[in-house]
Image (tube, rainbow, N blue to C red; front, side, top):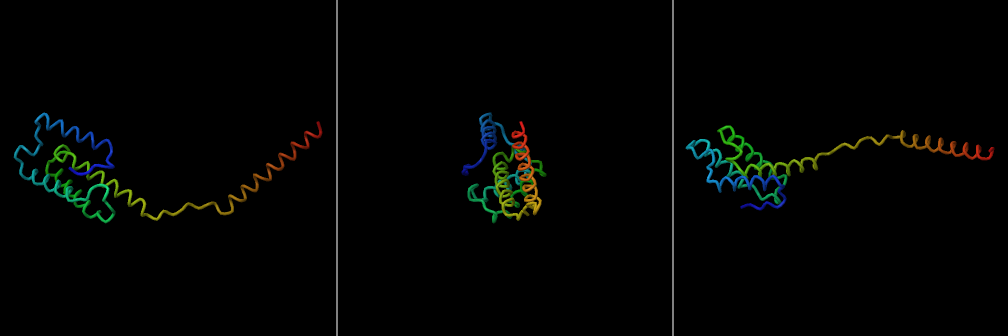
Length: 144
């Protein structure tokens, strides 16, 4: 079994469901003899198994991950269900999320404008008003 360090709770839920079905002696949907669906599921499983472990995934693995996603989608089109793909599809989704984070980090994000002279002028106006308020307060205390 692949290392699952870094996976979230949903992986463990899917594993529990898969193990429960095994314990109940349930068979995947492709056990009914649909050879095309079974072949599509096996191709998707092989593509996901060929991916590096989750901690080792880098942006360089994007083409492999996209090919695995294409094969998973083809398995769905052949009539496979999420249960047929079981934990493999969850592994793929976790890897895709990690790759999306790489994309977010690599994008050059333009910094918002800092305000130019508007901020120092606003700060200066605030200081002038505060100083005026303090001067008026002192003058009113002297007159009392």
